[in-house]
Amino acid sequence: MKESGWPNVIGTLEKPCDAHAVERELQSLEAASIVIAIDACLGRPVSVGRFIVAEGPLQPGKAIGRRLPAIGHYSVAGVVNMNGPKAYWMLQTTSLYQVLRMAKEAVNAIDSAWKKATGTPAAKQRQESQIPII
Image 1 (cartoon, rainbow, N blue to C red):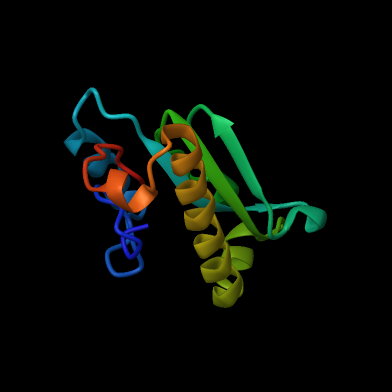
Image 2: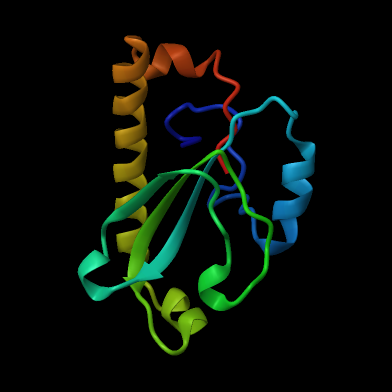
């Protein structure tokens, strides 16, 4: 998202927003902010490579048994690998190529949805956007 010019992105490859930082980052947001939460998750083998998009928060860390606060008014979860008995190990052995490919696909879809919803190219609108992406 950041590389595509979206402002207010929290959590990148360069500066991840891990479990330790997520609560601090949430507290730093303005109360009126609309948050779109994006994360990777595990799922059924037939779902790998697909996205789960919902109106409502995302529950980060759920696959590995972490109890973190729910995040976002909207959520996107990319199913990057199949669920298994050792969820943490499954995430650690997930193909980086798969994750990056899905990240690019998500950015393209968000850009397209923004243009369709606003009638304005995403590149122009992004500069004025106050939507934090976690």
